[in-house]
Image (cartoon, rainbow, N blue to C red; front, side):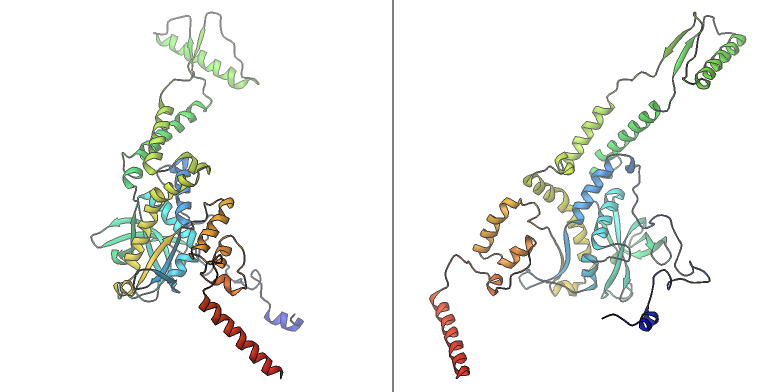
Length: 418
């Protein structure tokens, strides 16, 4: 129903017109920035090498895992997802700037770059230092600046001021996650750090070779041991430089007795071979392959990659959250934090029909659950929600009961008609 003109004028609101302070536009909104200040930025020169691609691929796959705050039964089986602020942070929105998936990716990326990352509860129902029974409403990642026996100093982005601030917090309220591949990725003499140094050296050589220098040696037809001859040689060098830089095509002339030798020939070294060797060694130590990075890996390769590489990262995140953000009482009541991956992501379309038949025939999934996996809306038929093999007929007792119910409904209908 459309509003009348008077009502529209009374209740109308525009983000540009009605959300403006006429005295000072920036009053009370924090410090402005031309770039996103809470975005993680890699250190140690990783942004100049292929290491960034590995970090990004791993963090994306880690964030693709579903992490939930769930309720378990007495046998430790999943029953339902908890409707809690913590589960909202893990499945929808971690803070005002990040979704749950962006938050998990931020954790993974910071963990791999710095070796250790902190998960800091920002908005809670009560002070975590006073009581452990608090609800986490928002959380952020933080860089650990200083370590103390029972406390840590973390640098966290404050979304009220727009600046990163240092906070001294107890370890019992901060999730501290260490990279499970720390000895491979973050140690000073690890394979990844050696590869980073080699790549930095290769970049320096490329910049030097592309700097535009000619690297020439001019052999003059006289001895330059005396001071007068040296000054004469410098004047001759300056003259050749002026000819090369001052002409249109960079052409210079020399005397017939002078000889010029060019030194900027490619120097053979084994730097590229060392980079290739360290790259293959890093792939093997992390459990990844080139096919995983370029997207051509088959199902078995991806399964091995998820179990040997992605699972340790996700387990480290989930176990620390479970340890710090759930009280002993909550854990004793069957609450926990679980992660799982969609098993149908790697299944080709040609195999979906066979898998759906096996799952429904063995009463593992209902027809509507299968339809939901392939992106179809649920069917209205009540049989689609039953865990029953459609290829087997119902038992006689159940058929008799169904027939009796149908007969009774027909008698009631006939009685109403009379």
